[in-house]
Length: 305
Image 1 (cartoon, one colour):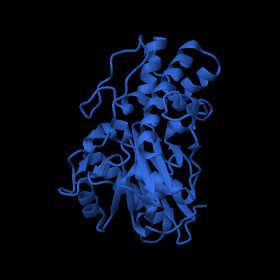
Image 2 (image 1 turned 180 degrees about the vertical axis):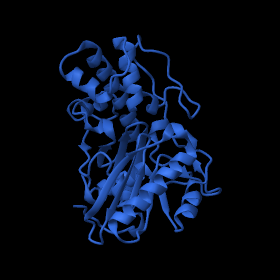
Image 3 (image 1 turned 120 degrees about the horizontal axis):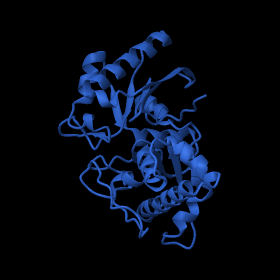
């Protein structure tokens, strides 16, 4: 079983030994209700899926953050109620079994490298564009975690707003201002559009749709989004120079990222052209749930169907 603990939804999947999907389900993340409510939701989903599968399951969990090696507690989670909590230990006690827990973007990148849009690539950078912004780096089929457990965390590199009419750099929960996450997350895109259009409550999907239809405020918000995307991705490429970049998360469904995103990167890239493809995920916008399930058989070459 794989569980993908996201900012707005928790998804679970149970795979059979041949990696065929037995059952897959999503529930809302009770983020506002706090840590205990999230524990309840994950526990309930695991038990429900296991009952439906009719057999005991190993469980891997992708989380929006990482587990500290020294304390076993969560750090760097944009679902901030998880920070400092012994999430793995608490869930292991509730479920009475060992769990494997990994950063959600790493799970996503591994899934796409093994069985998705980046099969066969030696160096893969997986991007999550959703409630938050994350990244996972896969080298020769394995996620690179790094000494601090933060390899691939491009979401917390501040980037400049080159628009002279842009607002002040927004504060990030990490303590900095103007982080990639404050520019490219779904809430950031929606807030920028609300500022430009003078009205709130429009979803990122609807903004992209309005931009395609020529609405001026939506198009301007989208152009600003693309500029931030280009800046952030160019910095990743300058350091990692991956063979493939795969986009995941809810905003990865925006066609404009594939149509205009490469040009936005090229404008600031230290190269005469962008060779690495910007690829739409092949396993769905929550492919990380498969990567979470495969945490128990690292090194396998799965192929979900």
